[in-house]
Length: 144
Length: 144
Image (cartoon, rainbow over all chains, first blue to last red; front, side, top):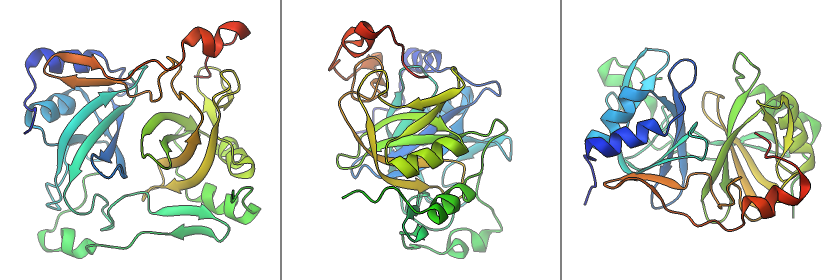
């Protein structure tokens, strides 16, 4: 059962614990809640945090589009929030999520699909859905 | 068996894949390699990445001290590198590490010990070692 929407007082306490940067942003790490996979890192502002804690669906702030980025709005691969955490000095958020399908715009589960090893930079993860399948039919581009 | 030091060509390939920000920095997420716990987020620059991939011991860049921050140099709680990953657009690093003891300067295992819930912001994780035990006898402060 989802704990969202959180009460307004909790949303205010969460936002008050965040130290936003000069652009009013804070980095947010998305981790699959059950497997522990680190899926991606993106940015949030005050309003996208509030929306996320109200709806239980992750909403980032797109630095390139300067607009809300509701994860999955163009790809269909939504991220539902399971737990919202903030670090000791308030400058990073950890989102424990339930990610449907690929989190990465390349169609891979995680954005961290390249590993440095003795061979150089090795691609370790398969493409689950082609970018065309994710975005192609809709004339839309990823949010970042 | 450790794969470090990586060959120079691999270190160069890793650094070439990173998109540094205007300050020459990139955020790095540290995740315990076996349990999947997200421990902390800190920053690296070109030189701290190179050192980390040469030594196999995690070295960040301290923005407050403007100097290398060899994790554990004041607390003794070192972070050994297991795997170095970079995301799709090169602007975030994922370090899979073997963290000895607490990663957080508060003495907790993870820096993400506060959760937003119906009660507000709840501290969920115990202090494993007091900050005095971590730093007290040495007159040193955490690296960030």
